[in-house]
Amino acid sequence: MECTERALSTNRTGKPSEQQRTFAHGNEKATILTTAGAKGRGKTRALLEIATHLQKQGTFVIFSTFNSFSSVPFRVKHKEEPTDFFARQDLTARVAYAFYRQTLADGDSFLEFTAFAARFDWNSFSELVCDITRYAMEALRMTKIVFLFDEVLTICEWFPEYQLPQKQNIYKNDEIVPLKYRLQYNNALTAVLRELSSFCESSPNYDFILSSLDENLFDGFCTDSGRKLQYIPLPLIPMVDAKKLYFDALQLDHSKDIPDFVHARFDTLCRFIGRLPRHISVCAEILFTFQSSTKPLALPLSCHNANTKYLIDFVSGRFCAPDPKYFDKFQEKWLRILCHVVLHIFSYPLSKAHATVHAPFLSVGRTDLGISYLELCNIGIFATAEHGASRIFPCMMVIISLLQHCGPLSKYAMHSFLKKLCVFDIFCKSGIPNEQFHSLW
Image 1 (cartoon, rainbow, N blue to C red):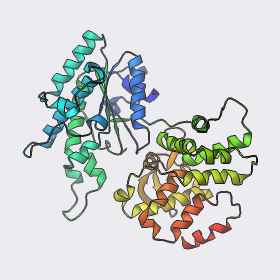
Image 2: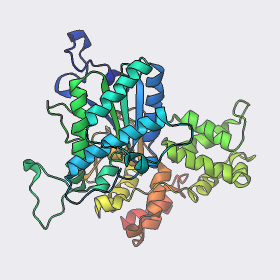
Image 3: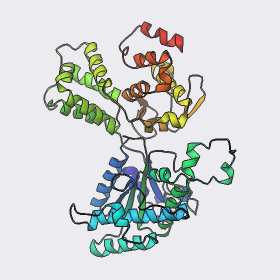
């Protein structure tokens, strides 16, 4: 929230004094704020928290989405229609529908998105925004407006056409253009961003915050004046709060005295699950659903490490992380990435090596594997205490789930040893049971 407020208070249309200069000044000055992360990373939750916070400060907030109740285009696109023209019309209809649902709809009785869109013409985004502004100022006495857009990557799925700039147009007909460029230079997405940025640069009254599954999606975009988009880090749930959620799932009163070894047991479980919101909720649901099985594992009389292992084994056997199909994106590299992630965690020199989230993830042989720590964090494999922090923690349950569901990797004998290395031998001090894995590697 601090990063959001700082970026939204940079006085877009005026030149700040030297005392007011921030990281967003000049060519780095934010015109649109963005946040990104894989499924379960908390994008929608973060946008809703931003909306609630800004509304309390007297800001009029419109929450629009390309998902949920408006997860389809506003109408069928005509074959001869230019994609950029249709995308701008869809954006206009989407914002109008969000305004209608939030402000004008009567209780639970409201039109569906396509039915609402069919009643009007959507040729002018600027006229719509002016009408919304007039309503906010006259009816609500609000002069500051923020538009939130959730899951904008969806528009690239509807309209996959793209136009590479000359400097990137180096791919022959028989070569596959990398997904990164197909998304960054998608015609529909570019049209939407340009429509929004024109408002940001012409008036201090409008701000836009977008979320996406892909943190690289907006890297190549600049406004007409050469300004880039500002990235906002997603929040992580503190381990102490995650532990309280697990205690609540087991209906334990965490205000009373709980043995230290039980706290230590759940601290270990928290480290295995990680700090991503959806993964924590999945674990809490497992603990709640199977209370008769998990309570004896959580609160046994013995404080032996084996009881912790049994609890983790029970949860991991029922834990299924969201599958974003990263194998399709990275192809055969994904197998190497998963293997090197496990080696990175269990190799003492590698696990202690200094790394930042923006650095490339390197193999044991120090080869760039084509993925950054930031992207691994957004997938859910790693987590950091603070954005850009050098200490990176693994989310073991996600890694285990990805290994279990990685079909191409399962044909190798090493696959079973990777899973054992992650779970079954975490308390083995000798390391002898893992020799087969290292031999195969």
